[in-house]
Every structure is written in structure tokens, then in C-alpha cells.
Length: 117
Length: 112
Image 1 (tube, rainbow over the protein chains, first blue to last red):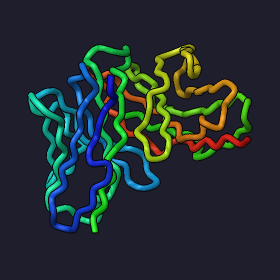
Image 2 (image 1 turned 180 degrees about the horizontal axis):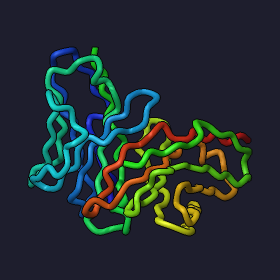
Image 3 (image 1 turned 120 degrees about the vertical axis):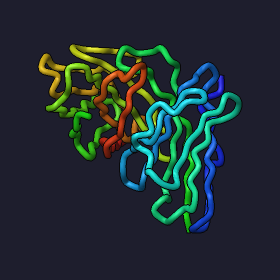
Image 4 (image 1 turned 90 degrees about the horizontal axis):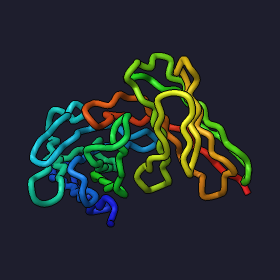
């Protein structure tokens, strides 16, 4: 059973370009989370999605950022018109619906490191 | 979300038991305590989760006192491969998931 897969692992964009980050959850998981980690900082929650639904996007910047998790295919985090401040590691996690009493354990992917020139 | 405070870094020799304490003075009644481990250039990995008293699994133990204002992650006989950042999280079960933000964590360095 493959773990959470993210691609690309490294992405370089120039200011103003678009960045698309992909995440394939673990088999059998229908819940996806995206996090952002700035250098020397912890991970910050961005968005939680289920298939075809955004459940909680309270951590997403209001502009330029969007996320989707279509019925078929991976979850996509899209950043339009990137700026230097978007440079960070973006992690995706997935979980099954049922799990621990405190909340389903989240399984993280290896991350995508975005560099904006 | 309850704020957590943990040491920024710790050093330990191989073979020793390591205890990392996390303070969460304003923990809410429905909050759970979860610990994750992160190696460089990797995503975090779940270690253990608890609500009160003691929880043990094959990797670690989690001790939570009655007032739940702190918790201690205990790693028995650490090895060099346990060198990582350890995050303490406090959050409620929000319909099957935890909406969490990871703090800076505790950077554990295991010394040979």
C-alpha cells in the first residue's frame, strides 16, 4: 500500500507564474489536508477536503490560492501569480474517515518544495 | 485552538530515555493531545495520541496528568535515528479530523 504521494517534489517558478501541486492520498483515504511550512517554522493548516468538497479552508489565503479534490484524480493545490513569499514546503496529508477518538491519524506525504524566483 | 509550549531543543545520548514535556494550560475539555515526529525533508509522522492518563504503543508513551495542562512524550532508549523534530498538538475532534497547526516543535539531537 503506497503512502501519500506528492509531485513534483521540487518546483521552481518565477514571480507571476502559476504553481500546481498534486497529492494522491493513501488507498482507501478520502480525506486530504494541505499544510504549508516556511523555513524554520512549523506546519500551518491550510485546507481540509473530502472528495469533491471543501470542508474547511480557514487556513487558506483569501486570494491566489485554491484547492480541489475531484472525484477522480489527485488533489490539487493551485497558487496563481506566485510571489517570493509563497516559497515554502507544502505538505499534503490524508486520513480515513474513522480512526482515533481524537481525530483520524493523518498520514503525510514527502512534500513539495516551491521556490519562487 | 489551545496554545502549546515545548522546549526548542534537547540533546540526549544513545540508549537513554528521553522525555519531552509540552505545556497546554488552556486545553479545552474536548481537546486531544497528539504528537508527531518529523525528519529533515520529510512530512511529519504520527507517534501517539491521548486524552488523559497514560497511553503506550510500540514507539512511545504519553503521560497526561489529571489536570491535562501538560503532557510528556517518553521515548525509551533512543537511537541516532530518533534525531528529529517532535511536535505536540492540541486540538478537538472536529467531525473525524483534527484541524491542527504545528508549532516549532522540539529538535531532539541524539548523540552517539
